[in-house]
Amino acid sequence: MHQLKDSTILKMNKFPNLKKPSHLLATLFGVGKLPYGPGTWGSLATLIVWYFCNEYIQASVEVLIAIILLALLICYFSTNDHEEKDHKSIVIDEFAGMWLALFLIPDITTAGLAFLLFRLFDIFKPFPISYIDNNMKNAFGVVLDDLIAGLAAGYLTIFLYSFF
Image (cartoon, rainbow, N blue to C red):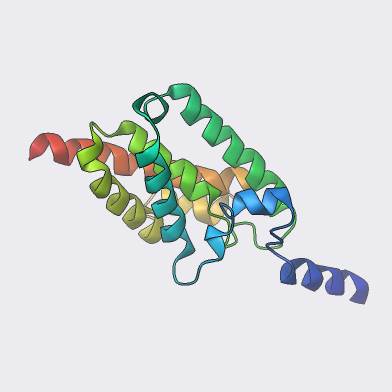
């Protein structure tokens, strides 16, 4: 029993190990290790990457699906290396959720609003985001709550854009 506890502590202390590809990708090349709100830093990194991508990549359903599948796969491997399934350093889920929000917006002028709304949904976790966050303690749940936050942010951005 003592050895099991020691291996658990060792596992927790070494996360994330940026020499491990799944950890490097899960943290968006170390962005998730930045202090004070790694999810916000991960979302901001997504906004910057999205902004500099050409219009085809921004609006590509195939790219969106690839990002979501990659986030699920990376979260699966990286969450197996840590007791806390949604470790604060894992920000690939924010990347997927934020990309989904940006995918839905009508034009680049609304990207800032989508970013702000995504962060609000991701931080405050209204229902059903909170339900998934509290009850799905696996890689799928880690990504799904951010995808729902992305959907909410994207659609609310569209609504506010068309209303004003």
